[in-house]
Image 1 (cartoon, rainbow, N blue to C red):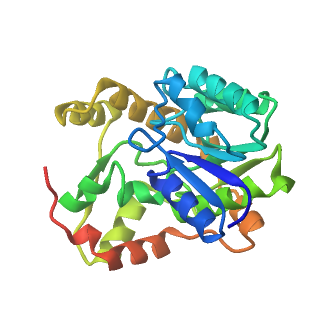
Image 2 (image 1 turned 90 degrees about the horizontal axis):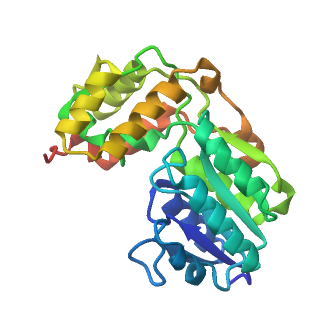
Length: 279
């Protein structure tokens, strides 16, 4: 095992799980923490931060559910102060591309006194296979707002590979790495790609943001979740400046970023999109 101890906060999530796997394969000592781990880590309980940080050298920080939500700034401030006091050498923060609120948390990390790298991510491919939109795909109707937005969807495998590298390589200290896919795609386009890959009829239906929020409320989702997705659609996808393709993945990994077609083929091969939706 390598001598450095690395903390992965949010280590059961889309990127955290993959980052932990990458680091473990590279023989680092990895501590994955969340609400049900030992030691436990709960963003809403700052007293839980100390045990998680104890004896750690570096940390990957994923704030749940998103840096845009109220309370994130206080939590990130407290965590970074405790990390500095605990003697951590470096942190990597996962941030959202084009999120003004997330950039405020980035500034907190940058001014914390810690060595750091910021990783700004576009919308994940895995939103359609592990996240919020999987049930839509299973039902065969993907009803989403912002149909004209062109999004450089990025793969969680690529994000994790970038994070695992910049977390242990101090050549990236102080840098902001923006991770996107290699092409911009509309929701209609990615739905067609998934339908073709899975040999399944999947329809894209454009709706308004208000209709989307109403649907989330009918599904019993909490108001904070409804607000968050409304923010992400309006503030992120509603700004064309946030939709550009950036080649940082290729620069860091010295290989191209995964395109949506490859993601769709790999995911379809698992059979997940041909399961029956469970309401």
